Image 1 (cartoon, rainbow, N blue to C red):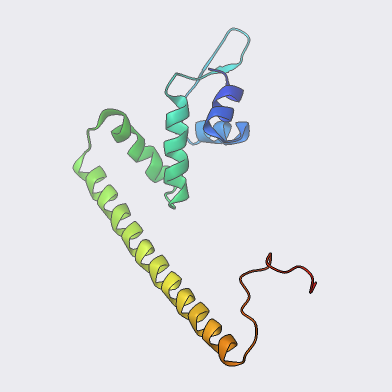
Image 2 (image 1 turned 90 degrees about the vertical axis):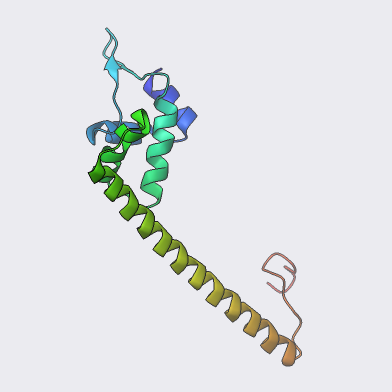
Length: 132
């Protein structure tokens, strides 16, 4: 599969694929014309790399995790790293849930305040455009 095909199917830029190769996260071969050729599983690998980046893992950690994703075999060190990353994500999810709950409380209080003042209740910016 050529670089443009992988990029389109994975929903990333060609530049991202080149970066993943520079970081040793993705591999390609070259055809006689010098164009990159990726194996059939490249799209899924790129999606996994994207997911790992999206939760904050650095390239170095992703590079260590990818062989496990390929083989299912892990060293004790990798298991420790994976457990630490899972624990970090658990803390991050707890923090996000706490912030979400605080925002919900603010919204609830603001709505109560608006109702007490007798102002009309707004349901968002798209409800009534005539006052703009």
